[in-house]
Image (cartoon, rainbow, N blue to C red; front, side):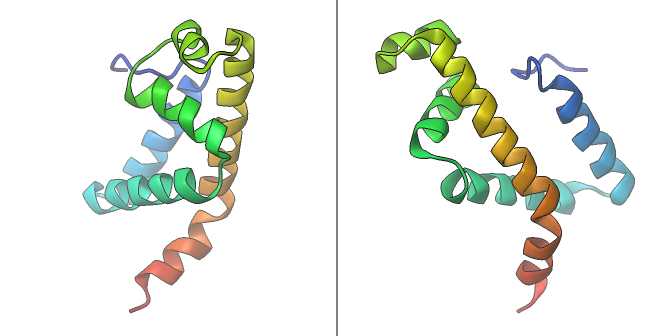
Length: 107
């Protein structure tokens, strides 16, 4: 597996990759749909603090200590915030994706 920013969530990322490959022979459409859903879930389904911590961690590549220093909180608080945000995103993508995808396919 390529080097990713996923630490504890590594198995989830691998599961999603396998699922995507199995569901579509050419998975570019499925991957782009998954990315759109992830972006929408980040905007709508996580708290602003969770969104900020997730973006600093995954998009900017900061570690939890650096994020804590930047936001003025303890790194354990950042760890909990990120983990809670990941769980919210996972639930949204796992349980809400089928209904959302169906609505997006309708013109």
